[in-house]
Image 1 (tube, rainbow, N blue to C red):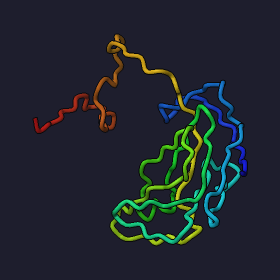
Image 2 (image 1 turned 120 degrees about the vertical axis):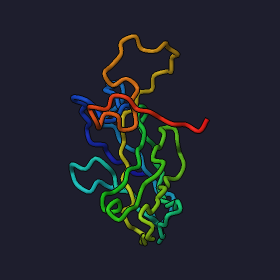
Image 3 (image 1 turned 90 degrees about the vertical axis):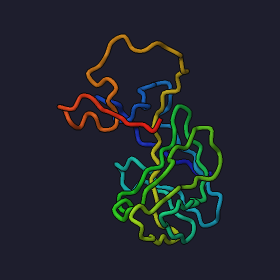
Image 4 (image 1 turned 180 degrees about the vertical axis):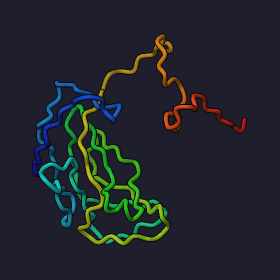
Length: 180
């Protein structure tokens, strides 16, 4: 078993991830335990000292098409308590139209890490064994219990628009048509 150390995360200002929290009970510098489950697996590494994500690698040649392709990384990972693993696209593959799907790895998952890829531009994309296919981010997550509540008493300017409603400041209402 190998151990990688995570980069210290500081939370300042407004977070773009609504599930991240500044919970100091969780070890932000603790090791990330990673092991290989396949002889051709490569341990994930950061592309640079300041890189947020750990690069994940394909263990065999694959072709990514418009159909969902499951890429085996051949590794297992133990996500630290109070965190989740977020599998994100690499910009080099995103430029070619490759999309990463379903990218959450729970802290209690103990199986092989696999990545779901899809070519959104229609052209098949060839991957070679050892290619970097995605990035793994380790992100703090709020694990509070769900509590039933009443609707908020204090209304925000945002209200209920959703789906791009903040793009146009003059459009404060969104009309949705349903087939009911």
